[in-house]
Image (cartoon, rainbow, N blue to C red):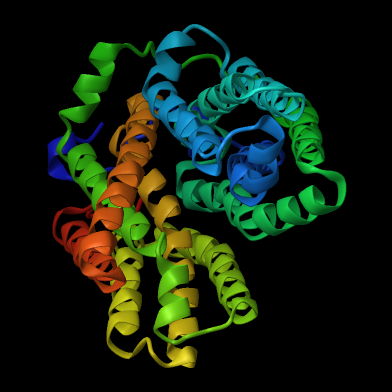
Length: 403
């Protein structure tokens, strides 16, 4: 195993389960993508159903919005601890259990009669979400050869891209026609389908190594892990500080109507879908390029919006490019983390997910403070600075080997 301090992250855990695997288990990889689709769909539903949900439960929209906060907090706690709590269980059984938890959370939300019940349902979703994300990269590493790891992660993260494009508009439409509870019922059905495919395709995956809290700190001591987590903080906080306020920017600066804004946001989602595959393509060839180029493109998009974003065409292109770039981010970062700690991939994945969740919260809060005190442009300026620093860190301190 290469010493982590060298920055060359080409070690693997078990040749029998990585580069020597005779046939990649693509069916199992697709089953993980379906699970991700179900999780992200459920995560996004409250945003599109908030008004009728709040009215039905007899609470304010701001109070109902805490359902999103509950999911994020539970996910941040579950991500680094899931591998520890389930350290002696077959990873296939753990993944099945997390998907069952996803189904139960949607069913409980669909039948919730009060806000506390809804919050319990969303906490269950957060546990499933955090656990699933923390283990998905480690499982992918054991399902395909290491050289195909970026491709596998790209397929898994396709579930995020599709859910990003579909979940909010479909949820809003279903909620308007049949009620918000029906949307959660449909999300439960999606989770059940993912579970069936996982049962049919996931092979036995005994735990590879015993995780502990000590393991988390040992992984955190590795230089490449610390650099990767720094990039995560900069990219995630910058993105969510800026993109959270893209709609008010589009309304005020290029002065787009709501129909055009919807099309621009759709272009963002479609850009993310293709960016996901582009990120996998680049990561297979040059991991440093994949990790560094994506935040750099986000910085360029933010700069375009700040300088010539008054042009509707420029604003639309910049937002679509932003979506493309952010879609490529997780593939490179997940691959980087797993290759930096192949012997403790689950712990590394848990640290990344927890860091990402914290960075999302910090970015949203900081962006809100900037917007309230200095206008929307200040949030975009921070986004450009943070993502530029992320790109610089990736190019200067990032992995020197793609294989």
